[in-house]
Image (cartoon, rainbow, N blue to C red; front, side, top):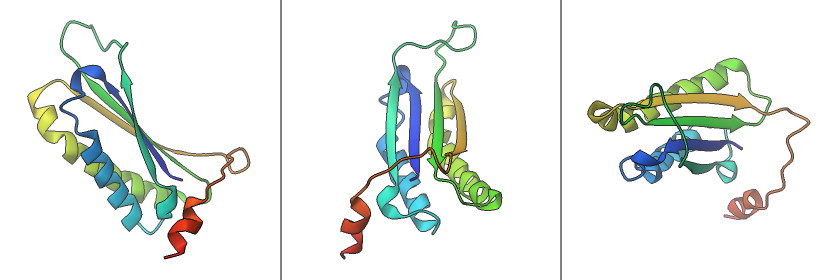
Length: 128
């Protein structure tokens, strides 16, 4: 953990530079000292069927979620979320200046007992 998920409308696929966003997200999370590098993952879900507002304009949106394991206090989660939203808004600022674009982001803490994982990447990264 954490997992960063970006749901985006298909009409901005070639302008959103999600690979660039993911690079920035991973740098932020890795440098935070809060999350192990081997657990950081990002993925994008393209939305082909969607509607926004009155449907009369070339609207677009990106909704992003950061799912984190339990155990970090609210202040730590808030600091990470605030920094990440700064990165998100900076990343999309040029695109948002050119078109109608809604950005939303939420950080979700997973249930401590109902979150199952099996991962051998941590051991691999710790081997040096």
